[in-house]
Length: 388
Image 1 (cartoon, rainbow, N blue to C red):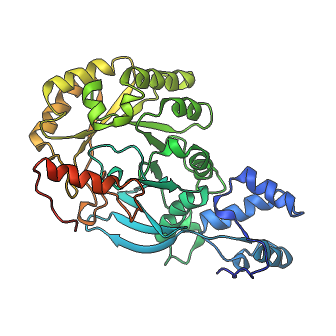
Image 2 (image 1 turned 30 degrees about the horizontal axis):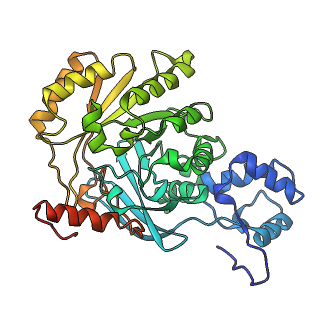
Image 3 (image 1 turned 90 degrees about the vertical axis):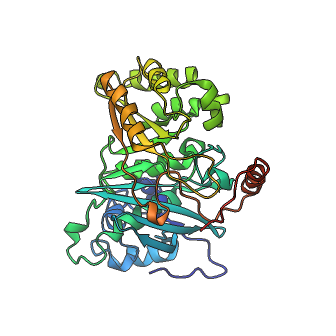
């Protein structure tokens, strides 16, 4: 429940996106004790409560005070759909009528949430539909953690026992729309809340940030927060990666691998056990040949890694096809025989456009990137298909 602001009243503070340290400072600023932060965080994040009147271990006077100066406001759900395989997708309206998408993938007791960090994406990877929509803006910490909050609540909305509501999610991956490291100042506080024992209490190995390779921010991340790292690699040489992941032209593979080694060496106590996940989308005839596997083996020889092969998920106007299953298995075999842990990502949620690389949202493309891209495809003689 939310009480509307009066025209003359100052805007209420949305507590959803405040880390424990920031929430403690905020309570002190309104004349309250720091410990109130932990109480409120448990109500909000563990129990999904957005009504201060329900926070029964807080005095009525403080609850009344909070209703005047604060709110717990998640992003507006404008659409949700559940796949036949159990995958769940939400479309959220954020701030200025833009949309972002969030996907939850269940796998037995494991429930992994794929969270967006930006409206659209500026990096324009050639195999990703999000990049073709251009970039609008960064999400706030509240908009990022709000996706976690909504998804977590979805698993216990009909469960009356509060104890069973805690920590419904087991894993969070910053792999949704956008490049997380280009929204560093909002992504890190959101991940801090994910890790906090008074919020979602996730292990640092179960919160993963995926980057296309923004090297300076990778170094900053390493020294700021301890989470798992994934790299959207997708090519084993600079020539091909320049085409697939254009940021490679600024931070080529040599610099990217050096940043990966710095990340691993920073956590020397975990060295040998800690690995970076290398994400590699399988594109038929593009990056899936034996020579590419051999190049990848050489590239990663001194970077402890596990490799996740991702069958390409098609989207309207895509210039690629998915590698045949036999080709993916042959590629995996070469990597396994070279000593790497190599998995093939199961394609989940593609019936609701929730699979990897399919997230789009209703992005206001100020760059006209989508229009220009379709025009270039048309000029090249490709047959355009209408979006579904």
